Structure formats: C-alpha cells, structure tokens
Length: 353
Image (cartoon, rainbow, N blue to C red):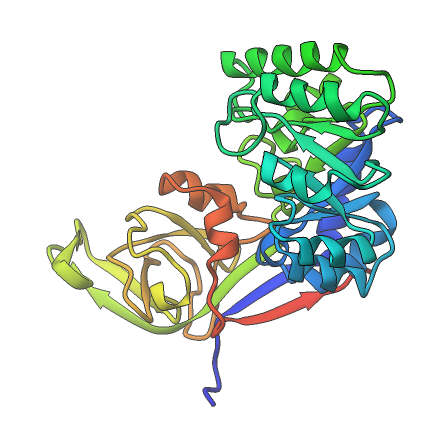
C-alpha cells in the first residue's frame, strides 16, 4: 500500500451551517427536505443522515436502495423522487413508509387503489420537459380520483439559478394557476436551492434542497464548500523559458518557472480537460494548473508560491477555495466534481461537533 494518498475531506459541520443558513430564508410554515441522492452528492449518505437528521424534516433520494439505507438511521420522511416502477417496489415502499413521486400514468396505476394518497407527490411538467404529467392529463386524473384526497403537488424549475430568466415566471404561473384549481388540502412543492435563494416567496409547504447544502451553488458565496479535495506535491522542477510541460506540450513557459507535480489525475476524478490557469491553493496561496492533466498527475505553476516543498498539500477545492471556482473556470458544474471523485482517493469524514 502506498504511503501517500490524495484525500477528500468532508466536514459535517459545514453542511449543518449551510442548512441553517438556507432555512433562515424560508417562511416558518415551509418544511425542509434535504436531497441526498447519489450518496449525498458524493459526501457519504449514511454519515450525512446522522449529522443532519435533527435539523431537517425529511430526505429525498432517487434509488430505492438509498431510501432503505436512510430508513436504518432515520424515522423522518423519505421521498423517492422518481417514484417506483413495479408493484413489488411499491409494496416495499409502503412497508417502509416512503413518500413517492408519481410522474406518469403507469406509476399511478400501481398506486391507484390505495385508500390514502398523503404520501404521494404528483409531479407536473411546467417546462422542464423531463418527467411529470402534462397539466391536462393530470386534471383528468384529479377529476376522477383526487378531489377528496390529500396529496402534494410538485414541479421542478429549469432555470431557478438565473433570477431574470423568463422561464421561471412561466413555470410559476403554470404551477400557481393549477394549484388554485385544486382543493385547499393539497400541499405544494416547487422550490430547489435556486428558488430558495432567488424566489423564497415560492417556498410553499416543502422545499427540496440539494446542491446548496453542500456549498456547490455557484452564485452564493455564503454557502461554504463542505468538501476539500487535496493531494500532495511529489516533485518540484525548475524549467526555462520556452520549455513545454505535460502531454502534447500544451503549456509553454513564458519565463523561467517552478513546476510542482501533484499526486492526482484523471483516474482520481479530475477532468482531463481542466484548463491552464485554473486556481488551486498551496499553503494558503493561489497557484494555477499548468499543463494537461495526466492519469495520475497534475502539474501546477508554483513559481510565486513562498516556501513551497515536496509533501505540501495542493487543494483543488475547499471551504477556502469554493468548488464553484474550479467549475466555472472549466465550464462545468459543481455536481460533476462532487460525484466523480474515484474510490482510490481516501475519504475522511469529520462528523459534527
């Protein structure tokens, strides 16, 4: 086993701080559903449940297996956000008291004969055009089956990160107009992270918050990145003006430089397409990528870094260097980096104080 390793540090205290900050933006009547699908966006589902269970009202996942794991640790509401696709899965979900999203007629046929619909969330397509009933199709189901049933009406915003995008106004209008046509006991949910931050007046009964919990929202620096991806310097090299670095000689020194080789590459989850100039942090100082990412190494320009040595940590993102930085610099999304770190990177989880 190698004596050195790259590390992914995850801080449960920061997740709690982010949730508390987000909840302050909501009305007192709005409940908070923490979206922890895909292994809590790469943060470790079980640890996250244990660390935030006391400050959220429920959890949202996609896979039935993740819902079953959460139930081992929490009695809170668990929403299967794409619902179920077989009668067998429905029977198991009912036994475990999971809430279910119903987004098409096939799913509704599986659950139609249930006496209570309180655990059902009917998803409406208001413009995302992925999942959800068309409004006319839903109203037919409503008129025939739902007029005396308690349930939750939900939809998903396509552009909530962009406050001035006209799509938001259209989606809110469709959702609100439909809500007014239903009976008063219907609960409502449309808010994701972007909606909480940009349109808190639409928080309604339930918000479904994912990326903001982890500090991956691009436009709010108050939410801290809960992950630190770091790797040690394993070599330092002086190069002369005009010399090239890395595969294809993409990076050409415009002056004499000092180059650090970092023990992290695309086999660890870094995109091979990371651009020269992407900021990293060494000894609390900003350095930058210089040269094409290799399978096991990334080269960094450390010419201006004071007192830089082999063994020093290079941070690619952290609470001090938000994950939004590396995402924006490379025209990617923060979700990509969170969920793509490979298993050979050592994960270290710091539970809440």
